[in-house]
Length: 313
Image (tube, helix red, strand yellow):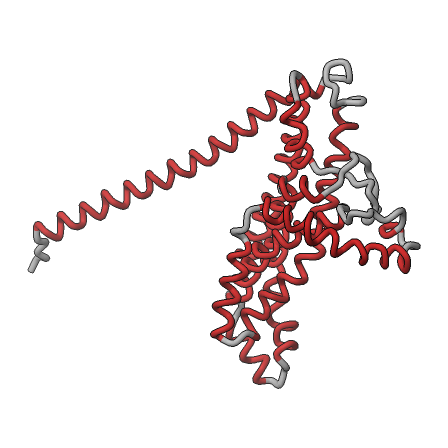
């Protein structure tokens, strides 16, 4: 006997094949579009940055010397503020993610997880207003205490800012902004850990913390690193919150509590672009190219670490 294929089944099979082909084509088009947009942005930045790379003070009033001496303090401030944001946010984010996945009751888990995700939807300008009106005045007495008792440490030395608008305050604001990103990614990583290994550790007499320390954290380390690096990428590119909170002077200093603070690339572009003209615009675009390259490298490193962790599973 031969199989009988009805006309309806053949028509259905052909329709499914056409649908699959259309979906594959749409996905391919979307991927090519993303790459084309990224390439177009990079090409625009490179082309418009060329005049700034050969300009001097006579061509651009923003420059006191060459372009490198102009962008280096801004790059330092960008990385310095982002590092402090990462130092403050990562332990809290991992703690929240562990609580949501291994400690919180089911009823509280859903609501708290929703609130953490909702934190990512708050506009950056709101964080800036909160930082300048609430956080900075609240932290200023703490800065005075740190200076009085730990002033022998270079980070806490110098004359304390009277407003609290320091690079450390900007780091705290950035930490709050990247907290939901790192928490959400870490939570997903912890949920993918082997449940059988966790149950085996508990069956052998390990406490819940010992189980987390021995069975969850080691296997989740690549994912946690990727989450931290993605949060770092967000902190590097933040603009309005830093521009509103930070009292920048364009210097390069490791002191965290003084009024002499380095600026960041994104904040400097936002504050300087409205009054820029001529080659000054090219200078700001060139600093944007430096920020673009820095953020791209951070995210590329995060993707590489994440792919390694996925291959290792």
